[in-house]
Image 1 (spheres, rainbow, N blue to C red):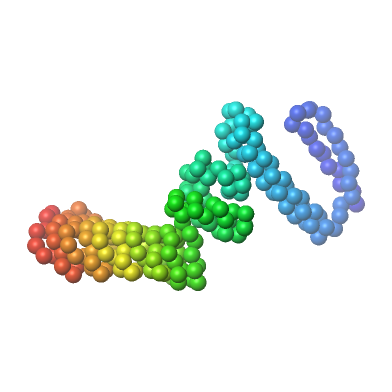
Image 2 (tube, rainbow, N blue to C red):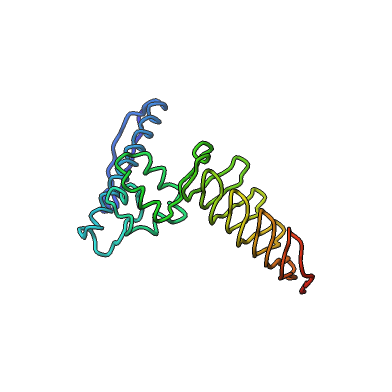
Length: 229
């Protein structure tokens, strides 16, 4: 059986027709998949090449960056400083470290990642000896994004629990210590000092309806009963 295919060109009003023999379904699917892979490879090469010539002043002066940026293009050209905001953006920041680690030629980029606080992406094994700023997602849905020492939260960091509660501030050996802000799932917010995971020192607790207590705390209890509404 034959089918007539009609192709139209955007640059011409001429219409040409050709005939082709229909192949079995499996063969057609295979050809489509092969063509899709080839297309994606060519797009990547095209984008990387266009990125390179634009950065070196050889491309269109109006186009300062390609419509689709490739991390590999930036890293290959060692243009991390020029595109720092891209590499550290929410879309790219978790992809950069894995790419750098997977390719030996990128090893000289590691100091730049450390200096510019690009988060290392830890897994259950690498977390045990975590010592640089990075992100770890727990199986239960919790996520910590911050500084580490000897596999524990140490320094500034943000921990998000699976129930939506968030603590952002200082940590010592996995415990909240120092200044920090805790947002509870019901909307209550405490901002102030912590010691060993408890509110200790000066802080302000604000409830969803707007009431708040601001004063001193000892082990999660008010030291002064100055409740303001």
